[in-house]
Length: 444
Ligand SMILES: [Zn+2]
Image (tube, rainbow, N blue to C red; front, top):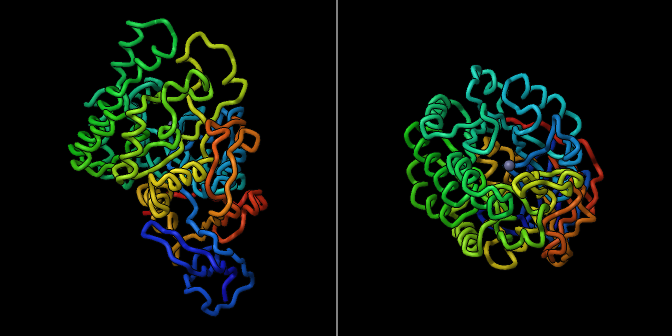
């Protein structure tokens, strides 16, 4: 006897797709049956030939709690995620205060409890003066984050020596280390040569060379120390080619974001502050290189870098382009945008599941519960109707940012229902069961 049976759908996993009925018991997938096989359940749901995808896992989002809740909070950010089919968010530590100590991490976990609409795993940051890494690791964050440029100095590891020393301390720890690639020396020097404050100054401060240098340092330090490293958001052709040549040297993974596959620096002319983020958008050749790298499986994780700011913050006057708060929302549009790449044959459906669910779950210690529709895994399931389409609009966004860079984009496929650990939390595109998300931790 199952709690719920989802009948008549086509199950898509990273290894392919097949028609199947899915039995759910106690929040987990309990059986995957051939279509029409007899089963007893309290509740039957007719998927009507739609697709069943595992809930997406976004490895890079900023939910802005504590301290920055004019931009987003646990409730609004996880609401956006639920409507977008992201059932697990991995939350970055760059709030106010940053999540750098065991106390700050446990406070964050406590304040999230009972307020989440989807599951959330927390990431903590390593600082130069951190003493108690063991206390932090004992709380099983999904990663530790190491920054190399463009952050407050106590969190900035801006030389290869500093990166390597910290990775050596972490090499034996049961965690992956997220490294944001950049080069503080280029950032510092660029300001000395061009102080005009326009978009070109901003681009010159965060060049593809800075990204490639950050990638190379992260991979070399991982190779030297044996640490497991995940390189955060890359978006340049030079970065991709650096990654291609070095990634075999160490236990490393890499991510990019949907917006990097669509926008170039030319779009700042029309999109302005809405599109301002870091790394900055590049040229057409970079977009093409990134799409190719995703298509061929060189880039293995698609994350949103959901980084909302309030409309007032984005629209305020600033002295220079660099001063506009960086980042844009992405949780609610991840699935739609990547489905459009499937329609454009950049990827297959199984690839979508691999890079948006399976790979991030495995890399961040959730691979035995998230990222697949499989017996024993959490029943985090999306129902997607590929016969329907719609347009992404600002008006329907529930993030506090209240806009999307993809406004007006026509989508292929419509997410109708979302199940979180067996419970239908979204029906016909509306959140019907709020507050069912849990704090998840890296499995041993
Ligand atoms: Zn970020």
